[in-house]
Every structure is written in C-alpha cells, then in structure tokens.
Length: 319
Ligand code: TXA
Ligand code: MG
Image (cartoon, rainbow, N blue to C red; front, side):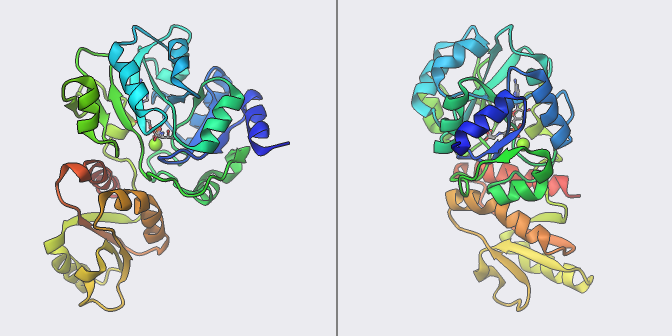
C-alpha cells in the first residue's frame, strides 16, 4: 500500500499521523473525531483550551467548517491557498469544541506541500494539526525532528524533506469587523492588504488569550536564549565567558572572528533564508548542551517581523 493511502487509513482509524507542510511539520488527526483530537493534546502535552488549525484539501470545503464567511476570505483563499495563511472564521455548528477550544471561531488553512495535499485529498476531510512538537518547544522542520521529539506517540511520520518556509503560517482573524493578524508569518502583509483593500490590524487583542502563539513561553529551546543587538554581541560574549558560561552563538560569522573556539551557527542576512534555517539551528545549538545561546538580533524591519516575533518568544520562554 502506498504510504499516503496508509496514512489516510490511519487517520480514519483515529490515529495520529505527522506530515510535512510548507511551514513546519504538523501532528495530524481526523478533525471530526474528538477521540483522535484528544490524542493530539496528550501527545503534545498541550492545554485543552488551545484551539487547533484544521487543514483542508482545498477552499471548496470552507463551507463545511465555517459560517458567515466574508467575501475577503474567498479572495484571500484564491490569492494565497495553498499557502502559509490560516484564516480565522466563525465556526460551523458541527465543529467540535475540542478543535476550537470552546471559541466560536475556527482556524482553517490549505497547506502548500505535495505530500500534505495528497494526504488531505486521499483522506477527503479536515485534518486538525498543530505543529508536531511538545507544547512550548521549537516547531519541527524535518521528519527527524518529529521522530526525536514525538516518535513513540505517532503512528506514522510522512517524510517530505525539510520545510520550505520554516516558521508557522500567518494567522489572520476575519471573524471581526476588521481583519487582524494574530501571528505574523512569512506572507507579505502588504500582499494581504492588497487583497483586503486595507491594511490588517497587527497583534492579538488582549481579549484573545487563546492564541498560544501569543503566550510568551513559546518556541523556546531548553537552553537559555538571549537576543542581543549585533553591536552588543561582543560585550555579551565577554560577560558570559568571564562568568565561565559555555556559550553558542547564532550570528553572521563575520561578527565573531575575534572569538576562536566559540560554537557559532552561521545566520543568513536574508530573512527568508534565516526563517528557513531558524528552528533547525535552534535545535542544533540546544543539543550542544551549553549554558547560553546568544542570538544577534536581526533588523527591526517589516521583512523580519515574523522572525523577530519567534526570536523574542524564544528568548522570553527560555528564562
Ligand atoms: O504553519 C502552521 O500554522 C502549522 C502547520 C502544521 O500548519 N500549524 C501550527 O499549529 O502552527 P499550532 O497549533 O502550533 O499553532 C496554531 C495557532 C495556535 O496559536 C492557536 O491558538 C491558533 O493557531 N488558533 C487556532 N485556532 C484559532 C482560533 N479559532 N482563534 C484564534 N487562534 C487560533
Ligand atoms: Mg505550535
């Protein structure tokens, strides 16, 4: 039996299947089976009130999962699906509380990865899938990352190679009067604004604490991580080394020439490449088992917004 056919059969049987998307690997379960959804929360160690994104084979299934769908949703789906955009819409009454965390909205997306799309088409319905990592930890961007972290809890891992984008989808809330980005991703905000006809609001509202991406303790390696301005990297290193700490650094190697023997993971000056490499780099630096990971902060520019968001959370979560 072909592995996608086998994976779809496992989903139908209520089992967990990890699969690649263009952003990060997902931990998939049949979105219409509350027992299967419960397995996701158990495997991740995730609090039950955190809602899950439902992955669809195409935008034609939107009406099965959402109601009061605004015209903008259709426009955005046409422009960006399959792709790294999650739309928050008012939920269809048939969507279970296990998916929505009891909220009246649901997150939906069509991922852009050939294996994911094959799986979704073969399965035929919605697949709930958070990132396939333990709660609060760095998202996986290879099948090996999933195996290392969740191996035994998953019935099958589809290996689609390293994820092209590398960080999670942009989450856009269309359930209110004005579109709002709840989690920045690598999709250009200006491109979203062009389809909407106005710029979306940025940032989660205080009244929506359930976007787990909005919790400070997310995307964190186990090792303490400090984000420092590029110009202050040398000073931070001196202070750490003087205190006898074992330090690994994520930076442009040019900035570290004076420090022989420091574990340095090269960081790209290009935000797209940086995002692509980020989680694998954090896992490698974490695996060194040192005392501190220093990261040279990228510029505060629009193109770096999503990367800076993940780095800030990683720094906040590691303290
Ligand atoms: O790129 C991605 O989106 C990946 C891949 C696997 O698709 N998935 C992902 O899922 O990042 P997860 O569960 O790790 O993060 C989903 C985020 C969470 O912060 C969750 O709170 C938020 O989406 N979310 C889901 N449904 C929501 C809703 N109805 N309202 C507000 N936030 C929601
Ligand atoms: Mg996640």
